[in-house]
Image (cartoon, rainbow, N blue to C red; front, side, top):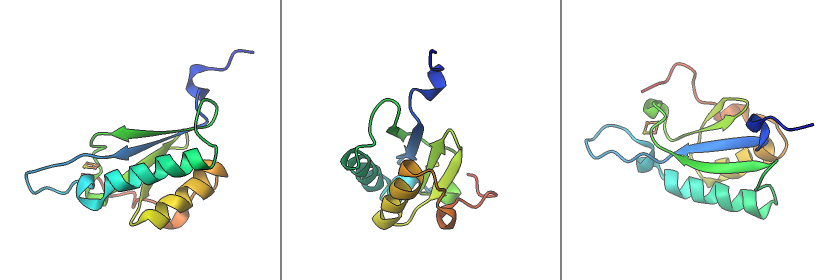
Length: 113
Ligand code: FES
């Protein structure tokens, strides 16, 4: 049976890497690039990268800047606010690898832009 296009990857994580210069909050001011690089490296090291598995992507502003730095995992549509690289490692190990949401890193639902 043909796989629907939406399942080409089992999971997809998008990191906002937006940089602003007007003084408004942005994820790039909170080491988002470093977090993205770490996630990509950890996913690859764990053998999770590729079709049928996990894809790590850059994104522009996801319009939740007040909660930044943020990343979102699909298809579950789970939003994370991370602090450091240990948080990224936990998201990879728990959610991206084993499908367990990291509750302590969930973005507060009311925080948008
Ligand atoms: S700058 Fe990251 S969500 Fe807007």
